[in-house]
Image (cartoon, rainbow, N blue to C red; front, side):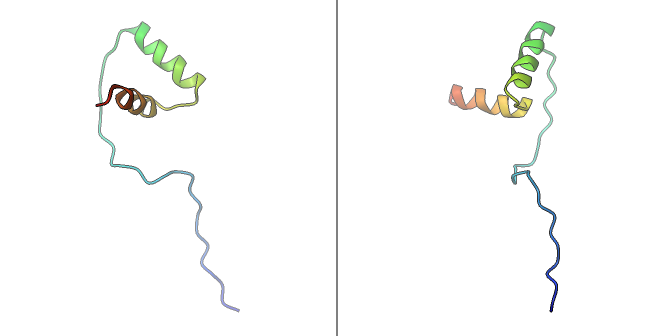
Length: 57
């Protein structure tokens, strides 16, 4: 009986190549973003995508 090779399952979806984005927002703005992302279990890049989608850009 031939054995099938074992494949590692991945939860990640294939994604675009990442780019660096370095910003220095005011602490209050950063805190609001961090609280929102933690409360909604979103990464910063997911929220950035959401905001740009909503803005239509």
